[in-house]
Amino acid sequence: MVNTCGFIDAAKEESIDALLEAAGVAARNGARLAAVGCLVERYREELEPELPEVDLWCGLDLAPLLAAFVQWGGEEEAIERAGAAGRGTDASVEPASGHRAAPAAASPARRRSRPVSAYVKISDGCDRRCAYCAIPLIKGDYEVVPPAEVLGQARAALVEGARELVLVGQDTSRYDAPGYGGLDRLLADVAALGPAWVRLLYLQPDGVDARLLEAMGRHTLPYVDVPLQHASRRVLTAMGRRGDGEAYLELLAKVRRELPEATVRSTFLVGFPGETEADVDELVAFIEEARLAVAGVFAFDPQEGTRAATLDGQVPEGLRLERAARVGAAIDRAAAPYWEGLVGRTVEALVEHGRRGQPSAAVGRIAAQAPDVDGIALLEGPRLRRGRLCRARVVAAQGYDVTAEVEAR
Image 1 (cartoon, helix red, strand yellow):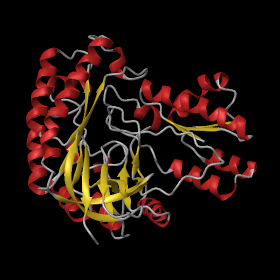
Image 2 (cartoon, one colour):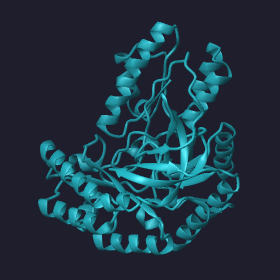
Image 3 (cartoon, one colour):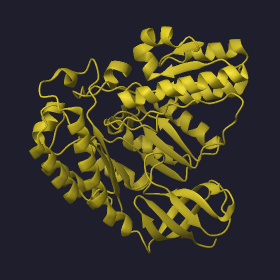
């Protein structure tokens, strides 16, 4: 089964590559191949004749997939995998919207170890209609996942061995279920299930208020992922977004007042139609002042059906890539003091797996590192069991990665 992404061209290409790779695996093993997810939802008619190796095409409605698994004799494991795909494991390719998607080909003959972290989808779709974004074209308008379903996902992940629950959606800060309440209640209910860590991603800036920050201080890691996209008011307005660099600096100051230990992550999009060198200068100056711990930067990728694809003032691709490289270098420079400042500090770390041939070391993450998109922690010390939560003293920082010595039990 290949869970595809249709958000930007790079993710589309990765999805196609994964389908072709999976087709080879299926042919060798005598297995059937199913393609699911956003790319299929949007481009099924074009893909089907080009990829006859695929036995089943299934977009965002997984009912046909589950029925096919039963018909094919997929048994419980295959059905469980299909359910996991539908629960929103979209998390390794990160386009500029902050939406992540993970095209992944899995051989039916190979069992994967239980995840230490699990993604729990709390909403889907989006009503914002940012000029560059194809998500509403694929997933439709914003809707919450009912709280009972969210909590069911979370319980299932914990039973499977997850120690960290990562709450995701296109607009998580907006969560509000009729008759239930808002995100503050949901965070409390998820935390009450007993995970070691709860992490919240994709907080749109206009949804980060005192109530949310208070709830995060009680129930989640102090990790604030807020996609800002730019600092130039002119560019943000053209994107269909609110705010500017000054407003965003005020927001970050509020976050740090409420969560003094906060790790702040963001995402930026450069090369949007009409963007000038002065706009990029403004963004770089903002990054230097914002003191972000980590951020992603992406060159604008025009997607058919979006308003931005038809705007005047399209920036040439080469210039878009140059600007992305410049902003990326600025992010690295600005983030370095944060990571260097961790050296000598004792932090909490989650062990993800041991290192083959090195019994005294393991690989994991500290609270400041989200799975899949941030750095890793090399944990030195006694043999560490996968899934263990431990205290460790950071002894070195290499870019966005750290080395830490685990304290004795």
